[in-house]
Amino acid sequence: MTTHCPPGPGPRESRKTGKSRRTVPVVEVVIDALLAHLAARPSKEWLFTMEEGEPLNYRRWKTGWNCVRKVLQAAENRAAGREGRKPVGLPQ
Image (cartoon, rainbow, N blue to C red; front, side, top):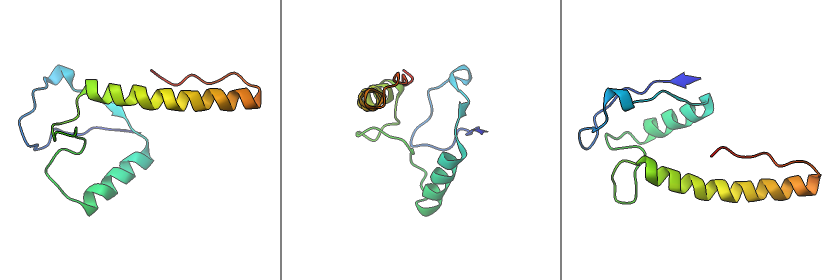
């Protein structure tokens, strides 16, 4: 399932250009969880932020993802070794 999120009112004006906006495929369970979260806690603030309260940027997201990916990949490598199979590589 793919959903399109129109630009909404945020704490400040977006600096993104129309060309930099993307369509991101999201599975339905994630959409349902986000909708439930927003229904329970309505807000006009950013949904994904950094510790400083600024919108989450790609660099910070990628740093976090790389850390999580390394941990998950190590667990997958161990499981594959125990099960006698080739490990599945996680996306970069």
